[in-house]
Amino acid sequence: MIKSYTVYKMRASLNEVGFLIFFLPLFAIKLLNITAESVLLRAMGVICFGCFVIFVLHKKYSKNLFLLLASLLVYTAILVFTCEKQGAFFSVVMIILMKGVNADRKIYRICLIVGLIFLFAVCILNRHGWETSRFINGEWRSIIKRGNIGYISYTAVVCLYLFIKRNSLKFRHIVCIFIISYLMYLYMFSRSGFISVLILLFILTILRNGHIKKWKLVRWSCILSPVICFGISWFTAAKYGDSPVLIYMDKLVQGRIHLGNYYLNRYSVKLLGQPIYENFGSDYCVLDCAYLDMLICEGAIFLMLWILVNTTVIKYMYDNDRMTEVAILVMYAFHGICETFLPNCFLNMSWFLYGEYLYARITQTKNDIKTSKLSSISEIYTSHG
Image 1 (cartoon, helix red, strand yellow):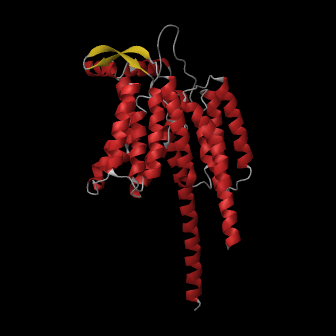
Image 2 (cartoon, rainbow, N blue to C red):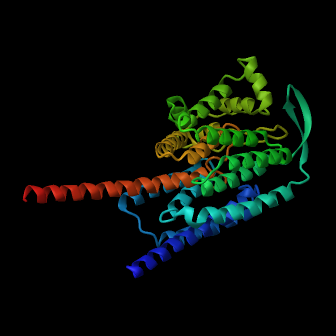
Image 3 (cartoon, one colour):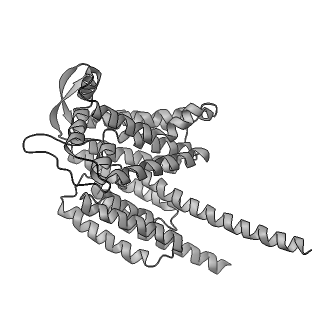
């Protein structure tokens, strides 16, 4: 018994080591906003993928799980060629490596430490910032901005902290996160990031109330938040120009609605996506909306899978009274309206929950099968008793 327990611990530690060797280097690089064009990121991606291959060969998968994960890996590998983005592919690799990993034991704490170190580095590297104009309170103002990616990195660190504290989260923790988030906003001046964190803290607060979280309106608003956010993204972009309200809203979000409309008109929707091109000459053209980016770039199939997976995982977490996870998932759903990083597991901490859900459901299915078999055997013995 002691020997088997020791072997189990050793295997779990080996799984954690394999996961961290793959995840941490790319996590650190992405926090620093090193993009896919960087030789460093490409080289590290190749090295980490090589480590993935080595570690995954030592894992055992059931036939059905192997077919599911292999299908996802092949599908996202195809997307690398059709849309020229690697985020979804490496995110699936992360989920494959999560098999046998208990993130609560060490992973979240180690990732939090690394995240804090590189978040500090981001703040130092961007300390000078740059001057730009923003539409604030009905007028254009000059501000010093230090980039949305810095706040996205900060949000990832906050989520890792919440994963660790989810079973002992107090109201004072929520207040402290709000204060720090506001200070980070004053430093980074990322309105979309700060609003997303406010949504996170608001949901955390209201779902602490046992009465409110039972309301059907609240429950289904959370579960359907990915659908709602896609609807908002598509409707505002498609109808841009038809309403003075949307034109005014476009100023508030720095032209994102107008650019969404531009990309919807420029590209057709394809099942497996297509490469999209930004910054045409002197024109600033960036599609800063995850839902439209997934629809146009990764393709209609990916968007449908994304919405299905998110609504399913949110419902699972809600039904199991895991409201911290619900708040994080809903926050990222809303953050996707103004940013495109959602398919990237190194910036979107929701991917930890997707992997956890997958393996939890597989374990639950196995237990149900075992229980069913034991019940059948018991019935046979009883009938012959």
